[in-house]
Length: 177
Image (cartoon, rainbow, N blue to C red; front, side, top):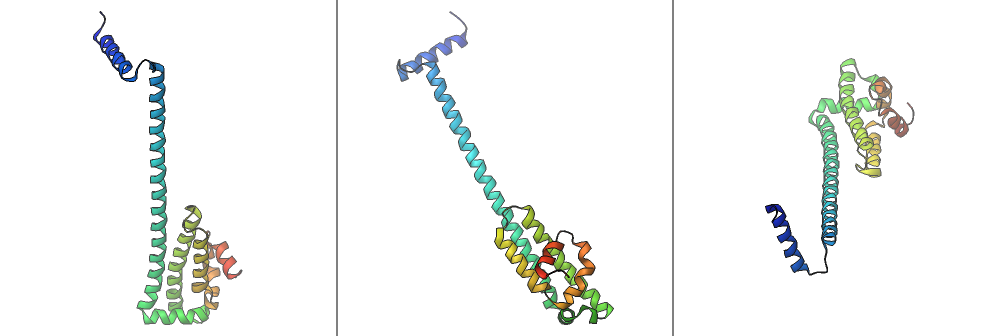
């Protein structure tokens, strides 16, 4: 009579043929199975593409939040200290007019700013699509707001080598200094 496996296969074949009728062959059933498998793979790929897109959007949002937090931190340091605000205000007019201790404080707060600006620039250039052209426009506007002052222009040449990724953008926005 044959093995139990062959018997079960024969019964399965007979049951399928009764349900589907004589019209469908095993080859047709196999083709339908392949089509269903392909559709399942396609659905899985579409789901994965959606997940990747959502993760990318989340990364972009997190990067933007980091930028805003860093700039708020910079402004907060200045706002929290009247003496630092005075140094920054006078240093913007003339870095050279500040005494040594004031130059250190002015330099430290602006190094903090430059680190944030460079981080922002790197995020914009490395994470394709992070805020797009609007992100670069905001970065340039921030450079103008915080750095387009005579005192900063006196300070900038001394620290340029520390910020190799930012030099070209800074010089383009501020004009070569």
